[in-house]
Length: 295
Image 1 (tube, one colour):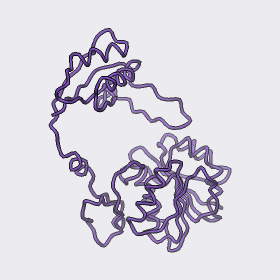
Image 2: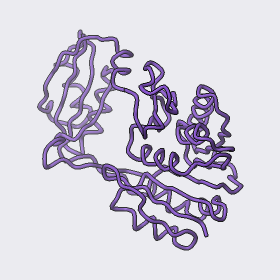
Image 3: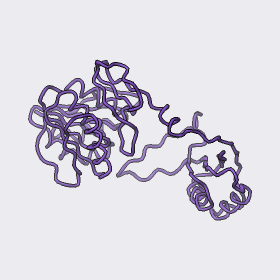
Image 4: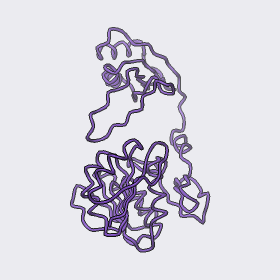
């Protein structure tokens, strides 16, 4: 049995309270928007190059403790360490121990990208054995196919990859886009990422799916030109990378960008205009995919 404690906190004290709870025995702590699910909910999208977003005015700090914890004493000590005069209003919920691996796996079902392309966790049978089924489990690197931006890029690859073409996956994460390109018939595929763990994950996932992709750190020089370039990152990095990414597109080649909110498309289109004319290819759940062809 575990005890889940949810405490109310304002933006100025939420992080301090979170740290103090960890210092006094919490197994884990998370901070959420206390107004989530209401009209007052405030989505936050932080990314490199932007000022860090402040926490929600009405935050909820959720801490998990072992069942034998002395909550009265623990919460009092944590509140004092966080600079609070008293323990904030809180609720306690008992959580029974479970098979957490099985519970986590149950939350990830096969994902249909198109009739031809599916993402299937290793513990599931492929719903369509005749389709291209990419085996991929949730891990530390971004990209399981469930996020709208990944879905947008996979759809684009399914539509544009031709036999033998060359593909660059810039910011490859788990390697899902690079693997999909290889399974769809690309001749040579390279994926790069700033995170060494992502590069390792991409290599491992490629081996599991029986394809050869070149995975490397993007902190090293990224050279060459490719028929298709796909980058699923975030708006600000995509703007900064515009000259470099456009250089990687071969004459007549195509580029697709995602990780862009539909309200940010004009910013990215403007950044790429000196080299490639982009347009909105598709929108999905508030996210956009931009596409273009290098003249």
